[in-house]
Image 1 (cartoon, rainbow, N blue to C red):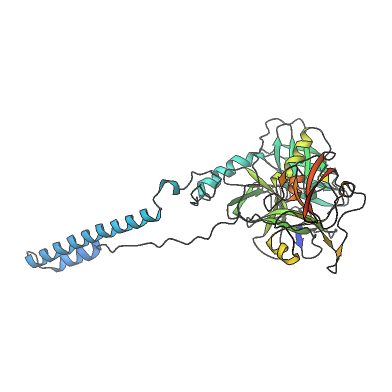
Image 2 (cartoon, rainbow, N blue to C red):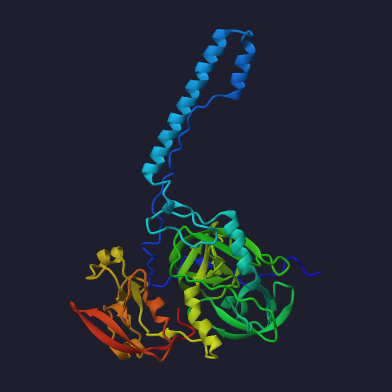
Amino acid sequence: MSDPTPIEAPRYEPVPADRHRRMAVPNGNSGPAAQSTPERWFEPSADPRLMTWEMAARPEGSGIGRGLLGVLMVTAIVGAMIGAGSVYAALKASGALDASAATLAPGTNSNANSNGAVAVESDQSTIIAAVARIAPSVVGLSTTFESGPTAIGTGIVYDQRGWILTNRHVVEGGSATTVRLPDGREAKASVYGLDTLADLAIIKIDGVSGLVVAPIGSSASIQVGQLAIAIGDPLGLDYPDSVTTGIVSAVGRDLAVSAGDGSNSISLHNLIQTDAAINSGNSGGPIVDGSGRVVGIATAQAQIAQGIGFAVPIDLAKPIMAQALAGEKLARPFIGVSYDEIDRGLQERFKLPLDHGAWVHAEDSGGNAVEAVQAGSPGDHAGIRTGDIITSVEGQTIDARHLLQDVLVQFSPGRVVSLQVYRDNGYVTLMVALGTRPASTS
């Protein structure tokens, strides 16, 4: 029997220092509207025990007692009917009885309809159905290292030919990775490529039949407060498919993470925050919505607090997933500029002329402005200057819903894209030939 407490992958956790200057802005419309619990009205009703006691205490044949009892019963019934009518009228007027406010069926991944009525999706049947849908696609990973212990993680099958998405820190530097399927079969995996932008990696197993492909959702439409389900192997391969639930606590989170082995920290951007329990063995496992679709890949947890975990949005993984299927090297686009995403606070603080866009800006450790365009970079060759505000890429406006990084990752390195830039009280259009993001770029 194998050791039930294997050593897990190097833990990724937030570190308080060396945060990247680029600020990601959470979706301003993602937070749920403030809600209050409707007041409940209860009408008094006759107590059967009281009635029985009163009738037993009255002398048999007492006409007055029977008459009084009859009057009390009729009064109670009429009062209850009037009260019920009042409750119905109040609920009808409030819209609570409208068909549009009905709770959505289990499995529906939506939080509000067109009239703003909130739909409850986190009921037990929804969670059971979502887990049943994703579980056959979740695999356990065990990576051995020549110079250290075995790392345990999780992955998802996203193509029947054996393509698996997981975390970079689970497999990077390993000498061999073993994949355990839900049915107990095992297969050796090869590392196809490591992502240079996020904590992601693509691995592949060959000659394995009957693989079930994970349903892939979209992270662009997730909302703060919606159901989040994590599934993985937090206690190692002897305890697979452990399920935890919670909500999406926040979106657009930036943080620096450090592996538990003391290696240098790296910056991760635009992460999903959730209170669904995530532990080291969950690394690379899916975060799914109420319909069982993957919306994120678990990547880090905070050790200094409870209920704070982070996941890479699945939309950020889609480009490299497609590159692997096409037989291409995993690569991310690069323009070589430092920038801040503009929100109202940043606009007011620095007196910026626009309330949206990516402000080409950088500061040193002392808070002094420095050159934000890397010399010799694609952005430098295209004519981007420090202080410019990039307002659109290929016609797509850069704002809180469409961050510059999220828009750029849709394009492959080598692609020439048009950037609209606000400069000196006017707009200019620049053409940028996207470079390839270096692996060392934070």
